[in-house]
Length: 367
Image (cartoon, rainbow, N blue to C red; front, side, top):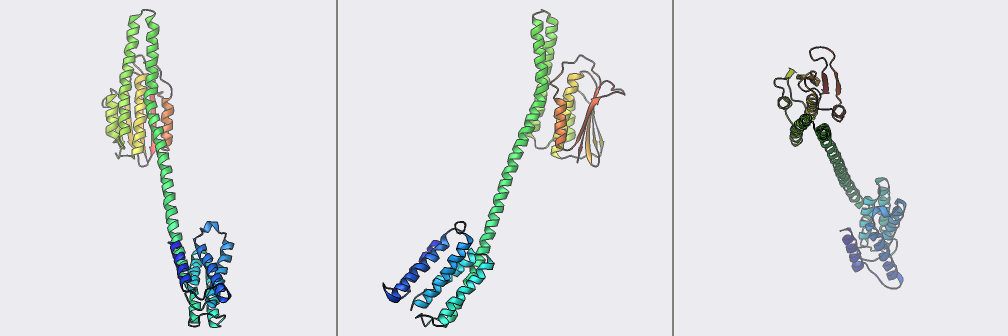
C-alpha cells in the first residue's frame, strides 16, 4: 500500500508539475522532481535498515527539496511531496524530533510562497505552505497505533511461548509421574517374582518338590498382587480426580482387610493432586505390608485437619513367612511424592502397643 501511494504521488507530480525541460528552469524542475521522488520512496525502506541520524538528515533534505520544488515550479502538485514526507516524519521519528522537523517544513514552504522566492506558483496562498506541517499529526497517530498493535502481537507471542513452555513442563511432569507409578507397581513385584523363580530353578536340581511347589505358589501370589496393583495404577492414570475415601475403601478391601479404614475430622475432598499422591502412598504402604508382614493386621487412618490431611497406615508383625524383600525403592518413591506437595513423611518400626514389631507410614499434606 505504501509503495502504491508513493508511486501515485510521483506519477501525479510528473503529470502536473510544469515547466519541465532539458535546460534552464525546466531542467531544475526535473532535477527537483527526481530528488523529491527519491526522498519520498525512502519511506518504504524498513526502519531497522536506516540509522536514526541518517533518517533525520534524509527527511530534512527532503523537506528542503520539497520547498524548493514549490518555489521553482509554476504549476502542478509539487506540495504533495511535502505533505506525504512530513506525514512520514511523524510516523518514522520520535515525537521530540518529528514536531520540530515538521514545523521547519511548514515554515520553509510557507516562507517560499510568502516571500515569493523564485518564480513559484503565484496562485498558491502562503498559508498552504504552513499547512505542510499538519500531516505530522496523522503520522504520529499512525505510529502510536502501529506500536500498540506490535505490543499486542508481542504480548500474544510471549503468552504463546509461555503456554508452550508450560505445556512441555506439564508433559515432562506427567511422564515423570507415569514413570514413578509404573516403577512403584513393577519394581517390588518383579524383584520378588524373579527371586522366587530363581529359587525354583535352584530347588529343581535338588528334587525337593515340596519346596519347589511352595516357591511356585509364592510366585503366583506375587503375580496376582502385581496385576491388582497394575489395575489400580491404570485406573488412577485414566482418572483426573478420584474421590479419596471411596478409593481408599476399595483399595483396602481389595488388599484383604475389611473395616480397616477409619476417618477423623470434618470430611472434605482434597485437591486432585493431593488425592493422587495419598492414594499412591497408600498403595505402596499396603503392598509393602502384604509383602513384608503377611498375615499381620492393617489399619488405615485418614484425618482431616483445618490446614492439612494426614494418612496413616499401620501394620502388625507378620504371622506367616514373608515372600521376600523388594527392590528397596518404595520408601524413596513415597518421599519423592510427598516432597512434590510440600508435605512430610515419616516411616519406621512400631516399638510399643498392640502393633509392636510392625511398621507405620504417616504422610501429612498441607492444604
